[in-house]
Image (cartoon, rainbow, N blue to C red; front, side, top):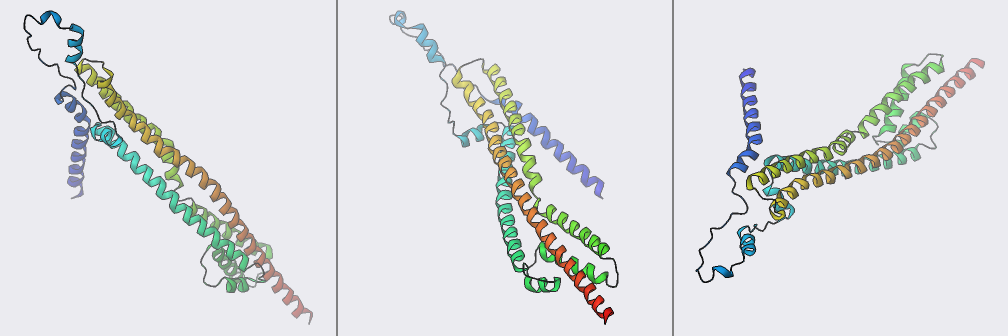
Length: 293
């Protein structure tokens, strides 16, 4: 049942691709030239000697006035160039969406983590630190929970170094998971920043190619006739740069911000490790006191 459905979808996609690729040629074959020579009206014999042939030749080719606003150029562009422009506009929307979302996420996460570190600054044990944090759910609470779990599981073992090593391994996993979380969306920014100029250049090349085909059909090199098609093609490159430049800037900015946040997470890991070490020393100290008694 799945195979016929897949074939039908494939056939539809191929048909749409053929229509999209054939539409520029079809549009050029059916479109009338922008400048049409008007039939000459015979003049009276008496006034024939006063007609200027240069002025008559200039009056024959009168290019139409084109609206070169961005929206008009988009509407008059080829279907492939329009698809490129729409794709680049969507990429620009994704860039700003990721930028705003990551700004809010990183700023809130860093603020919560700094406040949590201040709350446990005077704590003397893991239990006291968890009590100070309360219901705050962040990476520090996960680190403290991992340290307490390791201490509970390893109860009765005399090797403190082994407990600390296993706790450090758990801390590293939590830090890697947090790094993956805060870097989510950065790959999209890198892809958009790297590929958008080339996608826009593809739309420009395609549009200029169609413009030269139209020039050969109209058999004129008048700049007023040639300029609109070339301007529509160059608009694709402009939109590509509009999408790429903010993506690169936002990516570099968040690379620095993410690095600073991960350093803060490292401080939280160190704080959890120190609390675990104090608990272990306190436990062994109590054991030695009981043994001495």
